[in-house]
Image (spheres, one colour):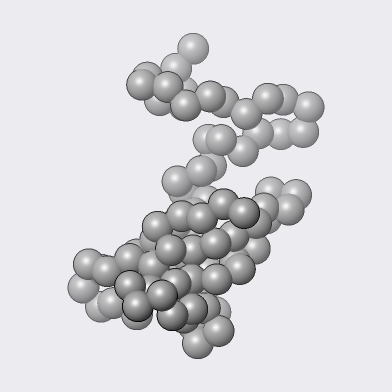
Length: 84
């Protein structure tokens, strides 16, 4: 199961991170857990808007890896996702 370090939605200064475990099914991100620095899963206590922020952060960081069906995902390179 993949995981991604995201900004802690409970941190008003955006200095702390949470480790978000997630799955993607048909291009949709499904959050599994969000563990803070104390290894506590804060996901059940988050509001919908905070969950959406985590999903959007994951999508923004991985959007160029996801590809339409039938195409291979773009490989990561030093030139970035849009290079030929």
